[in-house]
View 1 (cartoon, one colour):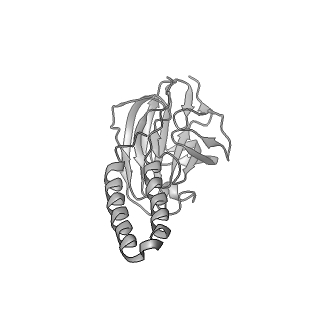
View 2: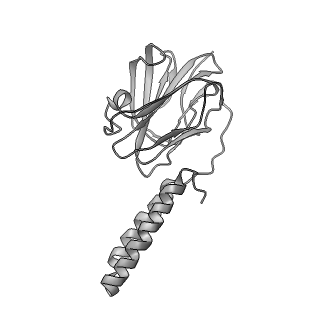
View 3: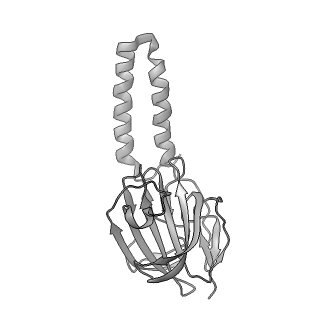
Length: 217
């Protein structure tokens, strides 16, 4: 199983903790040590599972808006996007549980025209105000169809580290990685009002694969 580059520090810490706790369990509990070691082993395995990098065939897209993350669609509504677009847009929000792959992908192809990191709170990721009050990043891409699309990584109650690797002027390719969020979080995508929305609330998404909307030239 291939692991994400963001896993290194976490796995080192988890390995040290597991080794220390397992040693203490064997030393003090002796024949009862398995009662501690087995649950620790499960948690240790989940750390590796969280940082997995799935092997996915990413296609080229022009009009399609691709699911940027694995998760569940929790919101589709018309909102005012005040940071960059300064106008109404359709917001699609996808919630990621700690068991989901947490690679963040470009939802559209085009050119990165804006990026900004915002420190903030750690409300639960499905809270509506988390989009504007939580720690977050905002990226905007001018798509191949000529539209400006904004998407936002949002830290949740558990997530405490957001990374994004793109810079203004970079080429964006729908479905390809641009960042990562550690442990439980959300991603919002803001689309033009005339976009054709394909997904619906409650849908499970596969990042880089599923089409969630279409934009026409």
